Length: 341
Image (tube, rainbow, N blue to C red; front, side, top):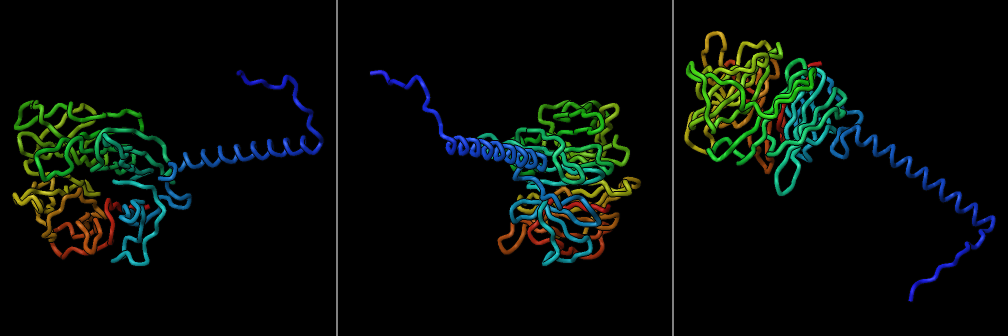
């Protein structure tokens, strides 16, 4: 039997009409408020975005807080974090800032791992988001804030094994040009053009001119420091056994991790390379460091090490000239970067 509906509506009384109008007004107001809140949330990057009061303002040490994964900061002169850190930044797995903005790499869970490369302004509001396949591992911004680079693990999740593949991108914010993978750059190795299917790049660091950059390239089980040129899209290998380079603020030295052991638990030591003399200096940090160190100034480096007391990572600092001793700077933190202004 089919349903039967009345063909005419029952007239509403005055009170009922007032109730209907009031409900409609509330519904429209609620919808407008929801739209405004949604728009504001999108402008701040959603639930993963920074609090409105949390911006890039130095001098301060910014870092990823292990408790919740949000970016926090503390005074650059603070020896320890107790009572000094300020939370409220965006959720990031890797973070770096310079110039007029920042780069936040955020892992997107799923059957196939993906990463959001989120470009932020000085108020840490989202300007652009790029989705790339893989697990986030390295992030850098040039001193001017124009050039950005990130590296993800396409397969594997450790530089200590040979079973990994990386994908490194470079983004020019001035032109909007994105190089999704720098593996097609014209590489010169041992004075000759080099091609190989196993070439991997990672750990980009930019010079002040926004044209020259340094990175690690691996092939045939070896790693090399390469100097790249954005303008003519070329790269040349300068030195073997250099990983995760980090250029000093004065552009004269590179901090890097050097393989010194076949022990998979601690194969690397931190070194600094003088680009004028090509002299290497081992730093006072004796433990194995698997990180792209960050220069806090021309004299001091910061880097993450596995934490103690159940913490995943701690941030340590050490003089860049090989003297002194390592110092604990942040309990429960990683991705350190100095914001000076």
